Length: 576
View 1: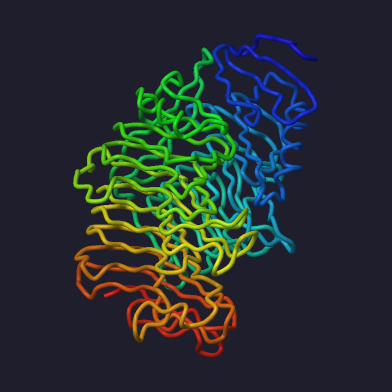
View 2: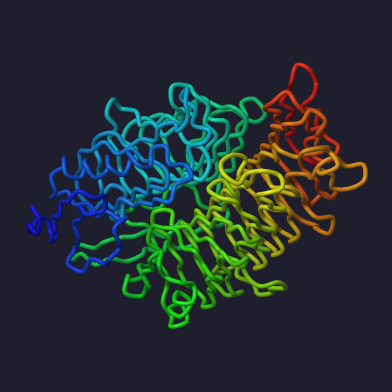
């Protein structure tokens, strides 16, 4: 059937069927060349042909935790009847202005990646921008870290685990679920600017921010943290196609003091940048080539794949958009950063995985140079679904994963992970001191997941910072207490550290967990902050997931040790 063409429903569809993944696509009249790992589907193509391509991808990605493959499914507006399992490094994206422009009747689901329905290693995948009518009425979304669920409409119920197996998620934003969201065995979750019929379930740390109908109950029992409005946020940009087949990136408007979703009016408020203003990068491109295009005034769209960078990508122009499809992965190979930005307004970086190389990078991503001074309150720099990894696929080494120097920066969902399993994981091999270091003032982070780094997971030096939801496992693998001591008389490094010089900071909904592999390794306190009335923390929990070691205090010298027998989960509601 090569070369068969038809015109239907306003789309010029090109149907090409061959034996390899990535060769089925239906495009508008001016479709860009996204490369072989992006499949653009049209409702004019027989569903069996689309299903065959989705199944081929999933056969590779179902258990491909540290594989090299990257994929994106793009659905043109219309009706589909499909089974869409979403595996590792797979993004499913609707191309309409509203999630209701693309409707899938059938299963869209994430299944637990490990045995016994265990989803605690179900990482790196996303569903964005379409509606689902699930078979049987319930959509299964059994996920953990680095999984985005954005601009979705579930016409039924949603379940956040698989057959009551453990899961360690998760993230939901700008989403409507008509029925019930059942969290079940999810350990923790953040829902931002979302709506549903009802929510049931809780475990350790559930945060509801800008949610119009949060469940009844208050911390500590059930462990619900509720904040009525999101103070300032810009939803993640998304790829769209208009009725004439013209592609663009929709950049949502900045919202303040918001609740609920952006798209009830049929379109998310904002502006669309034509794709002609983007350089469409491929994994074979060098950083030098991409920087040359950025210098010409282009934005940057990175197609799926692994980009081995000889030097950093430098974003220097205000309002530049850097947008990754299909978990495009930046990997510095010469000990440089992967990406840096100037201290300018409105830069957006979205949809990237940054993977440390074997040669140690002092920092993997830096937002603004050191000593950045400018205010960006009216047009902040935004990072959305930007994830970091040190080790796991191969040996990786970094000093700091993400360092933010620019004021007013917004981070909307990140997982900053030093691998605790996989290739190249070990105390002396995949070294990483800090996950996040914040030097800028008035930085806001939603959905902060930071794990296993060897010193402070988070070090906050700037004033006026805010965190809404924090999840952290401290490192499993310190070989002894001497190797894991931050100061005389202090065992270990606090997971969340606010510097003594900070005079104002606030955080809501924090869960910090230990799984020490040595019995004689302790952590004196999970959170360390200066004792001042303007540094305020709300709703904190510590959990010892194994029988070894202990976290002795939740925040400063407050909170019981987890080593009390039987094991306890100490909770602190407010500090001070």
